[in-house]
Length: 371
Image (cartoon, rainbow, N blue to C red; front, side):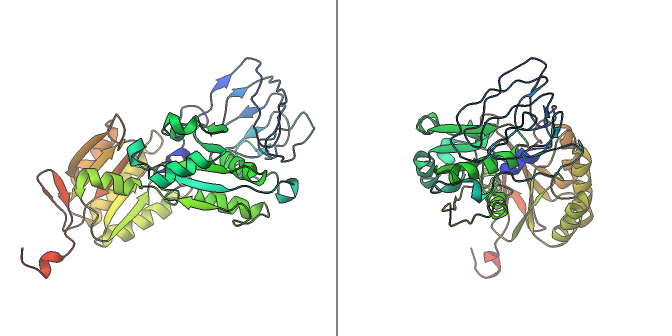
């Protein structure tokens, strides 16, 4: 996949957060970590199907996190929830304020009495089995439970997922709830792998996992936290374009889901005014047209319109598309299918040129050697 895990944090879905809605009475599948939930007229905006007049049945927890007995609350892996008819913002706890984006950690270290297992953040690379490292494959085969965004779980070969004791996945925007789920499963004694495309340290969830561990009163060493790196989108896409990143380079995400757009604009001005190659993540969604247009405007204030730009859509996947164009032509491509949340854009420097359909950014050898 050509974008790393941050794509999961966006609002691309036409539903509230990738969750499907239903009017029918259903049984909710309980988490294997943290107890079952019983909700009445609860509307979830993230991480699962939304139902009205829901009746939830209990099933065994594999986690040991505490859950409340009040039928107006919902626990997902120890995550607390307030009031019936509340709306979950995107992960853990619910709030009466429908506009609130705050998420609270539920279970703490005191709620677990098992010997903690291992928690490992695994990068899947660009999105095809050949792009996964052997270490990543081994880590997933050794894990009892695998947790991740549904789209990324689907990238894992069946021979790996078939060996797992349990697979837990959530739709788009469930990054907080599933990260806490993975932590609670580890605290309950399971060896858990939380996965993402690209690398866990590039716009991804390894940092969130450490933050939630800290907020629970746990430590990284307590769950033997580790990170298995993967090939990030910048590198996998650059490989499809030639050699655009062989000198100093910077990555910028256009997603303002977690970073305000004024900060993103300031960063773009800073890096565009210097001679960095710029890799742009999360360039376009239906709600991010203005972000993309603004980014193109900023880049053109600092770089010539004929600056080479590489575009890679769905790197390593069946729908992969590769294009090399110029900066002056970039904005009009925002309405085309090649630019979306699975696209990575590489903006060349003043020295970058195109040769034989490849982007080339000189390293500087030509200034010292004759060849």
